[in-house]
Amino acid sequence: MEPLEIECKFLVTDRESLTKGILSWGGVFLQNETHCDTYLRHPSRDFRVTDEALRIRELNGKPLITYKGPRLPGPVKIRPEIELPLVPHTVESWLSIWQHLGFEIVARVSKVRSVYKIATHERELTITMDCVEGVGEYAEIERVIEDPAAIENAKNDILELAAQLGLGQMEKRSYLSLLLGQ
Image (cartoon, rainbow, N blue to C red; front, side):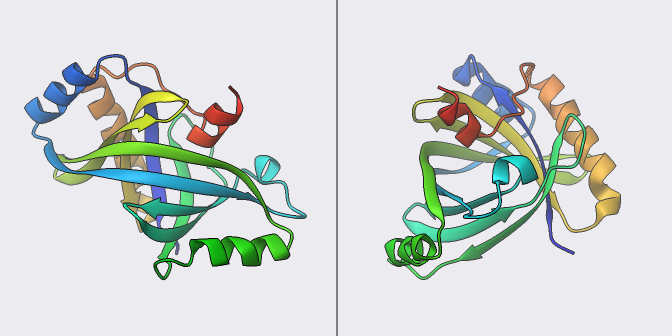
């Protein structure tokens, strides 16, 4: 089975307070990252209708390709995600191949991400704080699981931690949707 990404996104109104909260609950800062995500439109399949996404992410300059499958219903975003590394310095060639096959570039989303890890109920969660160019500041709490039986625990852990951190304004739209909606 493909890994399932389980996450919630929240608007950040006070980054400094959120950082203090994460650290006070036992969170550990891991790293800062820069992301440049190029989203693609399929030539005969409307990803807005199928609720899928295909992108090339340049993570600190290292390229990855990501497919995100349709979301499962509910307040927490749950969807299959497949991510594979690409050979460095091949992004433009990959984009050229896809454009020859009829794919189109929808948009590029750039962000700076601060990554934290935190354990709750002996299960590890990732918290990211994102400064998204042209969109704003958001936090995501996420867990990736292999076993669908762990979905409920992951959802509960995410919502519990969000409440502890005072994150209240959940955002269900993707950064791409937020950017295109501007």
